Amino acid sequence: MALYNVIRTPKSTTRYRLLKPVTAVKLAEHPGSSLRSPTQTLVKIPAASVLEAEGSAAASGLINVFFNGEAFSVFFEDLRENGEVVVTAP
Image (cartoon, rainbow, N blue to C red; front, side, top):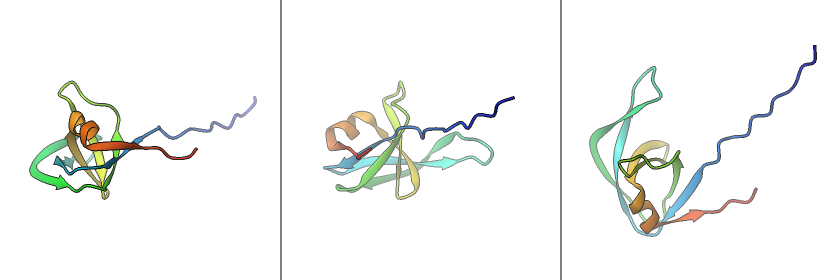
């Protein structure tokens, strides 16, 4: 029986550098679940910040992003209009 080494490639993530501030909703984690829920905490993420998008935009138009090690939800339209994609070298 042959054994094969499986190399898993990391999920490709898209990073955005903000050109203008965006408003975000802080997300709270639930122990034992990968789902996050919105909180009542709104923050303004400043221009020049780099956000890492998680997945794609939902039907609601929201997308989850990571900023400073914390999860937030922002409108994808705001992210596109107020940011630029950061291209990294392979």
